[in-house]
Structure formats: structure tokens, C-alpha cells
Image (cartoon, rainbow, N blue to C red):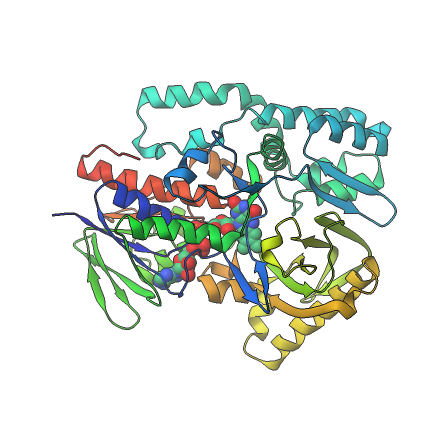
Length: 497
Ligand SMILES: Cc1cc2nc3c(=O)[nH]c(=O)nc-3n(C[C@H](O)[C@H](O)[C@H](O)COP(=O)(O)OP(=O)(O)OC[C@H]3O[C@@H](n4cnc5c(N)ncnc54)[C@H](O)[C@@H]3O)c2cc1C
């Protein structure tokens, strides 16, 4: 009889675990609290506009490139055109504009033109981008590290060896620290925001530009929810089962072995293995009551590591913005107050590059700003919360109207998402959009790999963004695959697919 794997969460990690479970002959049931697949990888439709809530760039979008084979196995990329941009984004203070070209030669020339005095730093940065075009990040996820033998470690080491210098140099340097080395005041501000948060390791940004340059970080036409739905389809076609509106309350443990799950509606489902592919903190401390958390795990979840909370204001506007650059970060002269904190930059993105996301002649615009989770949490459930959302979107729209005169009068729909929306919708701790934020503190966790098991608990594995620091759609999927490799190892069978 088929062994049965119970999977908690139909985000990308849970769906991937489901597909690989079926490909390896296991019965697989996914329990999802929502009524849709995708988790954070989602989109929502309002009045004919599709507001995308996730993928800006998908590693593995390029045929034959790192992570691409996995997406084929998951049925996510077949017949799905990918949109590749030759500029990642623009950053402007109104006087100067940095266009972040994905081509390192163009980027070098453009930045050196902006600030000839900073040319040596610019050259080093662009050289790093060039080097990372050859970097096969997926090699680190081919097999769970705890299953690798000496020969496999040796092979991985050889693949990584040429990058050791670059990883040490750029992996431990934040965008903010790098920016401070520049002489030009505009570049100092722009570079710290170049990769969305100033704590981002420069290496993360370099690999992103490198993969954009090689056509391996495109946007999947149709958007994030369609992408997730394709994996859901593959899972169902392979004979998997998904239970929606099925929130897991407890993981049932007998004699230190995970044997099933109990839902909030008191249904009990028993199985041979449990893979949790949802919020790490909720899994360890709520579903398992903290019974399998050692000192290291408690320390990880004590709040000292950064997570990423943001606000997304999505607008449906009756204007065709396709001639405008698709993503511009505006550096403000005067900071705006968002949820009690001053913010000096606002990201503005439109999605006209994918006409399927808005009615003809109209556009989806998204305003993105980082924000403080605790503030939203304190006011949640009160009128203040709604008022604050309106107030923030009002301020942002007023700014937008200055950058795109008259746009305010053409807005047909406004949708606000706060960290509380992300938390309520996906159960992620503090509404984190990527689990642990990628910083120089979490970079070593990414390189070494976090354990996918809990001490003392058998037949249980974790997948998803809380065990792959920095998160992302490909790492979530790869960790779902890794979890099934661990089940195969337990069963003493060869992993296939
Ligand atoms: C705005 C934004 C932009 C992003 N941009 C990119 C990008 O450009 N490229 C990229 O690669 N990544 C991006 N990411 C990150 C990426 O989306 C995530 O890291 C990844 O999707 C996480 O997948 P996951 O399966 O680990 O977790 P989740 O997506 O959180 O999935 C967990 C699932 O578990 C369910 N669940 C939770 N608790 C329970 C329970 N008790 N019982 C049952 N089900 C439960 C949730 O509803 C959810 O469906 C972005 C994220 C956001 C929010």
C-alpha cells in the first residue's frame, strides 16, 4: 500500500512537495487554510484588474538554466511565455536617475557617467554581476545537505570554489554599507535602495542582475496565481488530493513520531509522514506546542532576526502606462510617515508588460513601501486600522499624482494590503513576505542550510521559506522537493524526478 504524506500548506513549497510525493509513488494530501493554492505566490482580481502580489522575477524562467528543470517537473513553465526586462528598475530623486540595467557593460557605462569618481567601485560591482551569470545556485538544492555524502560535498565544493572569493566579499556586505563607500550623494542613496532593502547583501543583488541578464529571472505571463495554479493542476493530475479551507490546528505525535494532523474543525487525518510547508513559528510552537524546539530553534524565533513586512497599494487606472518605465523607486526629499515611521522611498510599478493583467488601455499600478508590523498589529480590528490604510494610500497617491500628473483622477480601484493582510491570508509570522529576510546575518544560514527536521521528532519534515532563509519561489519549491527526498531516504527508496 502507498505510504501517505500529509502536507500542511498549498503554497509553492507544499505544492512542490505534493508533486514530488506523487512522482515518487506516495499518496499525498495537502491541507490548506485558504480556498486557493499559492500562499504568498498569489494575485487577486478586482473590477477586471489583476493585482499581482508576488513574482517580480522568477529564477529558473530560462530554458535549460538553473532551476528550470524543476519548474518543468512541476508543470509550471510549459507554454508559459516569460517577460525579461533589460532594466531591473530605475531609482530617482527627481534630479538624477539611476537606471539599473541588467547588462553589466551598460550598467557600468551609465553609473560611471553619473559619477566618474566612483568608477573603481562601479567596476568591481559590475564585474561581480558578470561573474554570477555563471553561478548555478540550484546546485545547492539538488539534495538535502543532511543526505549528502563526502563525494557529493566534494562535487558541490568544486562547483562553488570559483565563487568563494565573491561570496566572502559580497555576501557579507550590505547594500547600505556598499552605498556608503560611494562619493556621489545620489548614488549613496540610490544604491542602498537598489535591491529593495538596505540590509540586502550585495551578492543577492548581483545574482539577481546576473540571472536577469541571462534571461533566467523573467516574469511569468499571467502572473503569480496562474503560476501556482499550474503546479496545483500538475499535482491533481498526478492523483494528489487538496483539502481547501482545512486549517491544521495540531500535528498529532505518538511516541515522538508524527502520525497525523488535527484540523480546527476537529477532523483527524492520519498518515505516515507529515511535511509542514507553512509558517515555521506556527508549526513549531503552536501545532507542536514547542515540544520539539531546542535552544537553537528558540533563539531563531526569539525575534532578533529580521523579517520583511511591507504594504502594497494596488491601483486600477484607466490610462495606458506601457510607455513608462515598469518600475521606479522614488527617493523623497521629505520622508512620509507610514504607520508611525518615516519612509524615504516609494516604489511604483506598473504591469503593462503583461497585457493579460488589465483591461485594454488600462493599467495596474502598485505602490510598495516597507512598514512596521507591530504598528499595524496594535491597531488591527479597529476603525483606526482602516483609517491608517486610507491615509497611507492617500499620501502615496498624492505623490504618484505629482510624478504622473492627472493620474489620481483616473484611478478606478484602490486596494491596500498591510502586513496584517499577509499574516491573515497566509499565516506567516509578522506577515513576512519571505520568511527570514536575506541579510548578511542570515546569509550564512542560507549557505550552510537549515535543518529540515526537528530534534527528537520522527517522520516529520519542514519545507518552505522558514527553512530557506530569504525565501523565494524557487527555494520554496526546491525545499518541497528536498522534503520528499528525505522521506525517500527514510523509506530506503531511490528518489526520482
Ligand atoms: C510582495 C511579494 C513579492 C515577492 N517577490 C518575489 C519574487 O519576485 N521572486 C520570488 O522568487 N519570490 C518572491 N516572493 C517570495 C515568495 O513569494 C515566497 O518566499 C514563497 O512564495 C513562499 O512559499 P512557501 O510555500 O514557503 O510559503 P507560503 O506561500 O506562505 O505558503 C504557506 C501556505 O500554508 C498555508 N497555511 C498556513 N498555515 C496553515 C495551517 N495551519 N493549515 C493549513 N494551511 C496553512 C497558507 O495559507 C499558505 O498557502 C515575494 C513575496 C511577496 C509577498
